[in-house]
Image (cartoon, rainbow, N blue to C red):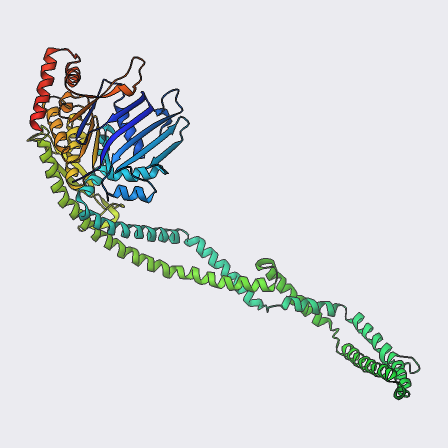
Length: 580
């Protein structure tokens, strides 16, 4: 099967590295060198290529920026290729070029296949291309949440499917519980608001305002307040138009217009123009009569009753009391009342909503309990297989009597969901607390790996877990940084042997200080500093033949020319070649 391979990395101005090229093999590559030589910069560089956090402190002193470039050969159709091409990246003869630049000011840029891309895209590709493990990952494995995640990852769809159903029900339950809490905690506020609305609606209903009533009453009040003046003016105007009965000799407009009309009527037949004027004067006479009649009616109908004026002012005062509280005018008051009725129905409906939500919450809690039980069952079954597989791997890592197991437990909680007939605490990932236990030798009780495993044992458990993952959820490239810490002797040989076996199905890169591990590598890279403390292009080189023996001798005894160390180094290489 063709798999992705990290072929090469070029590192510039990163930490102690000035400018170096790291050439990697498809199989097992060991990176060695003295302490402080910059071996871990290989891990750091790969982390940057794969979307890791950009730390400006990594930029070499005096440099403007640090640059890491990588070449990864990727088979056609791989998910990483599809995702890269969607982002506009182009492959160079099946090789994906990745570049990451970090400035001394902290700015970061990423390029993929010649195209500038978000750094987050590199992190997405990392999930399909490389698994990086170092000392921090070992510490992470000590966390219960990480142990549960490891078990879930191993179980695959057997856990992922019920977990997805559980997570959906859990989110819905949380949303309902939040709404219930809000309704319950705001009960007093809602009751106060409802009382205020009822008071206002009752006050408005008692007055019964009509649309536009305030405008009509204002006009009537104005008319009633000036009734005498209006009547006097109407009477005077009527007398001027139609005459005053008390002064029969007086001259009025109607009499004058009538006289003018009679004068013209006598001669209109002699001139059409004059006849037209006579007609117009006749129309004026008719209009004057109409106006005079209306003025007489206005004066007769005008109500100067002070009782009516008092009633109007009283009504206006009642409307004003409403407009001070509920709107600028009667129309606004009626709008407030309409909205208040709708809001009151909503508030009164909260009691019904409370019952509905409570019923749905109880049903969801019961459903969640069933889903949690299914999730626990799936994890329990996967835990037995996972533990057996890791135990078998530990036998290959010089821990033949060690036994790994999982404890899956729940914590009782009166406010929790019911699982197995008892209420237990629950969270977004279920009700289970998953803990990895280790019994390092027969007769030893299983204990949490945080308490029952030494540094070397923890390293081997970590490696065993990763090897098991490689069989179920393979990743093309594995990078281990000092995963053999705290290990030596026969155990170190077994780790080297197991890494070599893993390298038959994946690319394995190991930063190591153990010669027993390095001897099993298909390729060994030496990182060494120059006299000025930097690593240059010539500072990362492939060791072969005599050079590799000398480096292994240094790693064994700190003396490259020790005959005993050389003999041991050659023996290690011979043993590794025989195994391969």
